[in-house]
Length: 408
Image 1 (cartoon, rainbow, N blue to C red):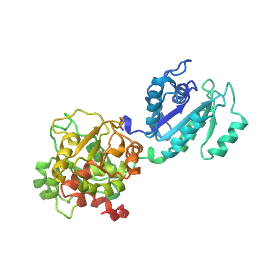
Image 2 (cartoon, rainbow, N blue to C red):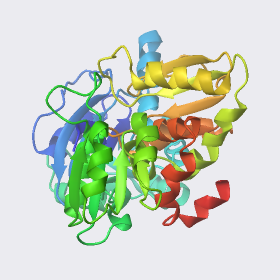
Image 3 (cartoon, rainbow, N blue to C red):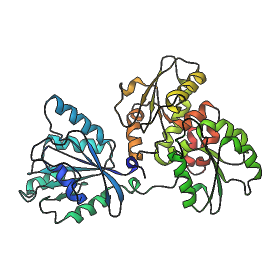
Image 4 (tube, rainbow, N blue to C red):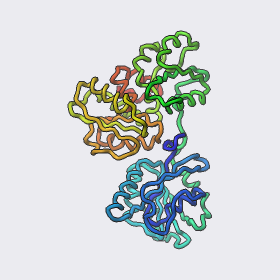
């Protein structure tokens, strides 16, 4: 599992409330810098640890929400930007102080549908008082509130149990990519071009993930380049129950694979597991509605070496210009960086497969567009629409997710 695709747990609160000390106590090791000076943590810091019953997670240590000055305002902005990327939020309070900073954070968590745990830290100095307990139980009845002391973490296991109970299972229980399309012993053909964008000596992550998923479901996996597909499909016995292709060669695959054999792409496979599949299906046809001087946002989930024929930065814009016949403008944002302009400036958002980030992070990136009624799609669906293979590419999943057929 890639680092960024693990469940993310964000630690939030004021400066000097012991956020970094809390992380070290829960992790059982010093993975965050601790200081008596307020504001030691500046930019969000990510650290890996293992939580029994959940598995590998990323703990995100954030700057104090009460930071001051011009630099402090930038740190607070970075802290707030992290909110939409986490699967669970831990709000650290101390000394019975609970005010507007904490209320705003809890409002932000609620708006992003992020489950939350409140930790009253430094209980060795002052236990949580009756008045604060009443306020929290009245205003936030669904949020567990727990005492903790990093000096004497006697209830560490109880805290971890609460995290395990609160974090949504969807954050750490990975659904199968293809399992509900397959039966025991089925043969699946993967079409994997080896071109200038392919990493030296290895397959790209979605291809590796597909191979593992097929084997986990007790099926047979055959991998071939697109040039060998025509001869291979004639001799394969049994015939494939499913073919998954790289989006860039979908036209070739569509011509080579008999129509009675289900065919989809790696990107659409990932869109269904990790993205907002229904909104992708609904938004993709609106590529045809783009007008001159519309601006398109392309969201990459990782930072990678940009090749001369890069799929997101070169091929998709070229295909989109040709398909629409319009003069379009493009912004590309990699990783989880901020957008260069307001979301309302865009007529379309195109998200990559997202193999290295979490479903929560993908949906968090797309939420502002969906809330503003800006159509969203992903690389694979956009390519399929522009090449006339959209209906076939999503058909394998429509049999399972039949309610999405309303959008076709």
